[in-house]
Image 1 (cartoon, rainbow, N blue to C red):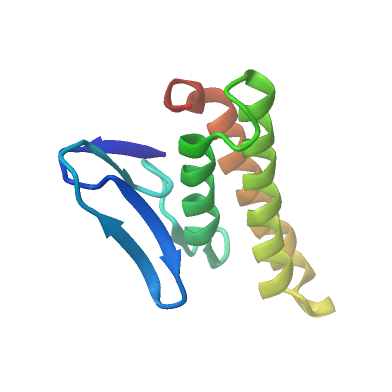
Image 2 (image 1 turned 135 degrees about the horizontal axis):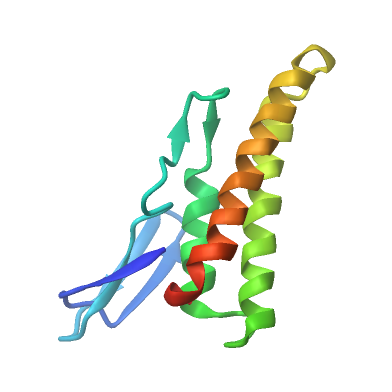
Length: 122
């Protein structure tokens, strides 16, 4: 989720080297990634959902699918797909299948939490 911080940013864009901010006198949204859940964890297995959480923050703020419940659901579905993609890539060998399943289960738990509690932040 994102939270509003007092600041001075009018626009944020990406360049080849990173983010660029342009000043003004307005409040700015700041990523807090997965809010009350760890972005990186080791239980039940190692996972790193930092980039998935950041993309989800962006989706909630920019609303590329629209400002409707269907748009929010698409952001949440993308979030789950990104997390599961991370799990699939990290635990890609056949002998890592149990860890992959556990990681994907963690992704489902994050998705269910966002579906249940995320509406107020959209």
